[in-house]
Amino acid sequence: MDTLFLCPQIKNFKDVKFLEKLIDTSFICFLIISQSLFPLFASDGYKVAQSVIPLRAGNIEQIKEKVMYELSEQKRKEDFDKDVINKYPNAVISDVTDGVKHIKLTKYYAGKPVRINVVEVNQRIAKNLELTPALSSDTNLKSRTKISSIAKNNNAVVALNGTYFKPQTGVPLGALMIDKKIYTGPIYDRVAIGIFDDGFDIARIQLNAAIEGSGITVKVDNINQPRILSTYVLVYTGEWGKLSPYAPKYGMNLLVENGKITKASANPIEIGKDSFVISGPKNLLQPLLIKKDAKLSIKTIPEWNGVKDIISGGPYLVKDGEVFVDMTAQKLGSIGGRNPRSAIGYTSQNNLILVAVDGREGSSIGMTLTELAAFMRSIGCVNAMNLDGGGSTVMYVNGQIVNKPNVTGGIPISNAIVLSKTTD
Image (cartoon, rainbow, N blue to C red; front, side, top):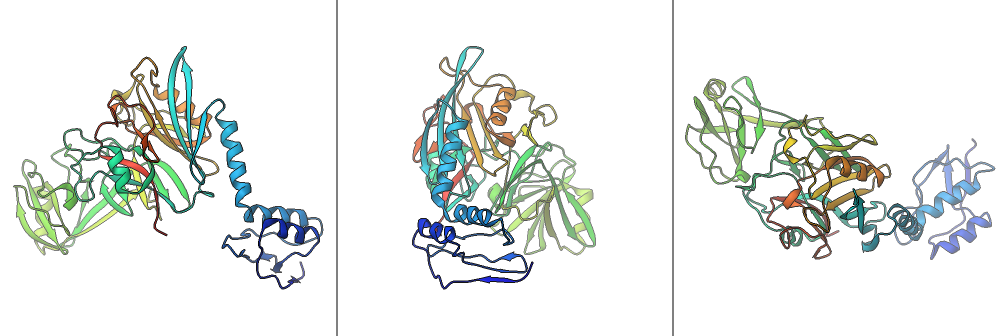
C-alpha cells in the first residue's frame, strides 16, 4: 500500500460524538505509514488505537469501529453490564467499582438451595486496581486473622480466602509468591494460578530451587514448608519465624548470611531478616562447609517468566475450557463431599472470576467439587481451580462480608486473594 497522510490539525477531542462526526464526514485523523497505525491519544489520556488496520477503500467503517471502541469507555462499560446480566439471570448484581461486579444468586441442586457469591472483574475497565495474594502478617507466616483485617490492611475492595494453611500455625501449605518473592514452595505438585501484568495462567507447579557453593549444587526440596521426609533439603527464611526447626535425624542446619555460611548446628538457629537457614541431611550439606559460600536460586516449573504473584489451591476445576477435577492426583481426597467452597478462574476475555459458595446449612447445602467445576465453566471460565473451602470460605466486598460463613465474619485465616486500590 502506498504511504498515505491524512492529517488535519486536530489536537484534542472533547467528546466521542465530535470524533464520530469527523469520521462520518471523512475527516479521519490518522497517520499511516507502511501499513502501521500510529497510536493517538485523546486529551483525557485514553489510547485511541493499538492494532494495525491498513487504510484502504472499503474499510473506513472498520477503522471507525476500532477508534470508537477504543475511545468509548462508556461503551465498554455498557457491554460489560449486558454480558453480566445475560450470564447471571435472576441474580442480584451490584457495582463494586468500575469494571468490578458483585453477583448474588441461588441455584438448586437435588431440589435444595445453594447461595453463591461471584465477583467478576473486567480488567479493561477496572482502573487502579491490583490483584495479589496477601498474608495475615507482613513479617511472619505463622499468623492468622480475619479476612476483614487482611482486606483493610491492603486497601482492598474485594477479598476472598486463599490457599490451604496449617491450622495450628497458619503457615500456608503450597506455593505462594507475592510481588515476585516466593514465601512458600509447592506441595504435591498441586495446581496454582500465576498472576501477570497482562493476565493469568493456571498449572500444576513444582519447585526448581538449589543451593550452589563449594563447587557443588544441592537440590532444595521446599521453602518454608513443614518437613515431609528426613531426606529433604529445606530452606527457611525470616518469614518462617525467629527460629528454624531442629535439623532432621542425621542432619544439620546451616545459617547463610550475605552469601556465606556463618553457623552450623543440629539445633534451631535464629534467622535474621536478610538471612536463611538450610536444613537437611548432613551428608548432603557438609560439603558446603568447604568454602562456606552458598547462593540460593529459586525458579518454578513451569518457569512462568514475568509472573508477579502465585497462589496455589487444588484441585483443578476447569482446564482448557473443560470440567477437570483431579483431586486424587493432588492428594486432596479429604475435601470431597458437599461443602462451602471458594474458587478462582478466568474467562477467554481475561475477566477474573472469584466465587464463594455457602454450605453446611439448610438454606445453602454447599457444592461438590464437580458441581463447582460445572458452575465455573457455565459462567465462562476457561481455567479455574478450587481454593481452601469449608470453614475458611469467606468473601469481602466494599467493607462487608457478603456470604454467610458458619462463624460470623469468617474464621481467622492465613492468607487471601485481594483486589486492592493502587496509589497510582
